[in-house]
Length: 162
Image (cartoon, rainbow, N blue to C red; front, top):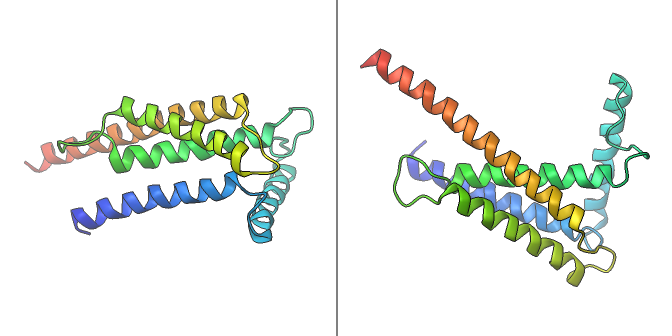
């Protein structure tokens, strides 16, 4: 795969994921299929939990657990994809990590406010914004770690071959 095609794929993955997050944030206005997919995901999670004796996905004793974990995971994935697509690398002109983190947290705050303005049943919540921010931090840390390990293996391979 050429460098341009690889970069384009990373951009498409990131922006495609943001489109999915946008649809999920307005799920009360989305078609029944979106709600069905969300319910199917929760159902599958519940079955997996029963099989392994866990209780995380649909716990009744932790308020908003599924929603909060969902926010954290969604924004961790967004941060990982953003870092891979736009983060600092070997090339000049790449975006700094701190700018990416601030931009994603600002975007997540905008999504929360947008929910309140565009959705009839969803409202902005500080707990969601906190979960989004923690997800952005975790996703960025994972992306930095993965990039460092890949860079380390690349350096080792170059030293062995050259």
